[in-house]
Image (cartoon, rainbow, N blue to C red):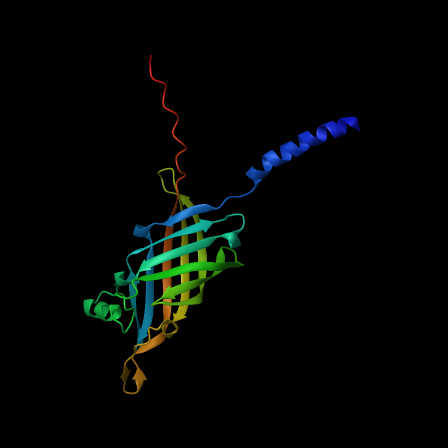
Length: 212
């Protein structure tokens, strides 16, 4: 009995020493802008016309042990939209659509992540566009992790979703022969490749003492 009492503090000390190692830490990944694409499509009469945003930045906090604890923050420069047609881009930048001079940024911040099946998640978040913030739901397929060949690590995701542009004040439309020129719904098609943030260098070693 005496021996057990003497061992108890040692057992407790060992447990607390190992506990931090057992807890999984979140890993920070930043968007690889050269290998990611933020695209959208809108019906124009009887077909869909697409575009993309070319300037964006964001981070993903990934908890591999508990994906529901992960999060994502994204910011897009609204004026970076590109549909391949300069006149159309000019109109989209105007107050009729994104009004990018007044509202230069589109932002998304996740609020909830739910696993739907293996490697597929439902991500709910607050989307802010043209000064309006509303919740949207995105479907995210995780494509796994891979080394980048330089000692770093990458993560990949395919994202799809749908939103009603009128919910965000993007309501312009044209009527031709009694039919609307554009659909209210916008399809989102996003591919993300992200790089794991390298750990900050440890504090610099103290300078060597001066020679006497």
